[in-house]
Image (cartoon, rainbow, N blue to C red; front, top):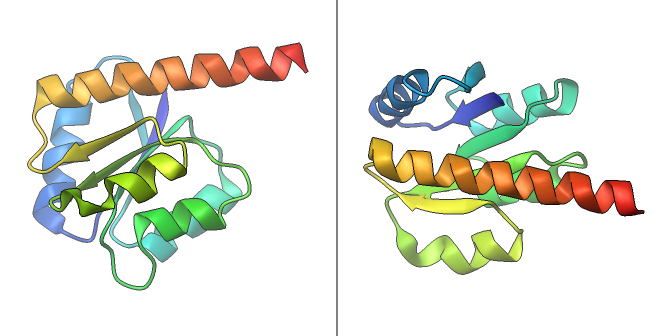
Length: 126
């Protein structure tokens, strides 16, 4: 599973990168420190999963997802739970509260896999 992670907090980004590196079927394709960097990468490259911080300067993770034409499965992460409704309105795979633990991240990855599988089933039936 090809993954992009984006977070403007360097410590949160390093922690997430460390957790993801422990998951065997995850390939970290891009590590972005802001939403514009993530947007540009996602416009030009395909990933299966984007793990995005909600609160980034310039463009939030929610705004980033809204701006994409080809959306990967997404997990939004934040230290503020007030964005959950906006996140689920965008059909994200999951929404996790920081600090992220490995068990919780694994659960989110499984949700993202199901999300991707369901999307492929819908494409095949169309």
